Length: 321
Image (cartoon, rainbow, N blue to C red; front, side, top):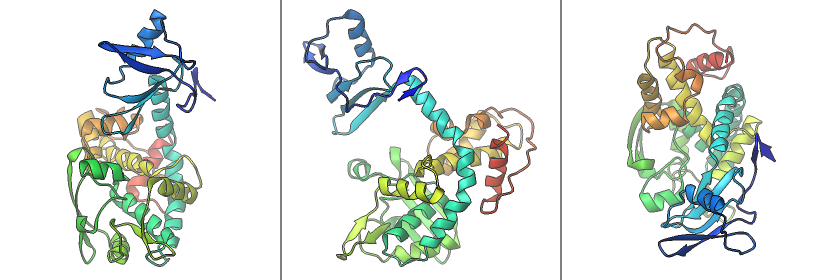
């Protein structure tokens, strides 16, 4: 499989290892021989894999999509991709946004059907997770990050992070990067869903009960599979909701005319609870960034039932690109 000139080369294939030698490293090819070629040694060194990383794997070809992997000091697996692969993946993510927008009504109908199930059912918990992410643009969350850093996402939230009074929801938790998220919203649908699951057993808010009566935690793999099935496309994950929400907020500001890049990025970061730099680099469609400093945009919104007004405006714009 190739992407442009790149070769798809996962770390399940034999690769180059490294051994500490004096103040530096020696490199060992897949056959176990020490690499002495100066140019190849320079290439491997230029990957700048941190010295503290263990179990380092390096790609034997400079055109491999994955150039290196290793375990950091906390034992987490880290990945170093070829810059061209990273750029291609980012572009593919944005290219898929219009299809995501058109799939949203179908996805939301599927979710609503599953919310008619009993609280405690796995499908109900998955639908509740999608509803929470759809309404708040939360990160998915990772148990390892919670254990190591005390940060939370949709799948790792605890009951204590949410307080409800009627339809009013107060959400407070520590997000990735140590950011304190404090969000208040009035949402009858979300309040009903959270009210149904709030009293279920389990360490996390979004739990389900198996046949043995044991509370189980959702994981990101199951959630992404559920989202792809509900949307009818494999090009959709939970993270797509954040890219969609960030681009939507950014377009609302950019389309009014005269907005700076900072204005556009800040609008997205406010919704996503990250920094404007991260929002600009990872969550805003490049065509929206290009609107900075331009006059008001007059584009016909998409006429698609099941989308919010701001989403119809965004989809209408994306369809012109």
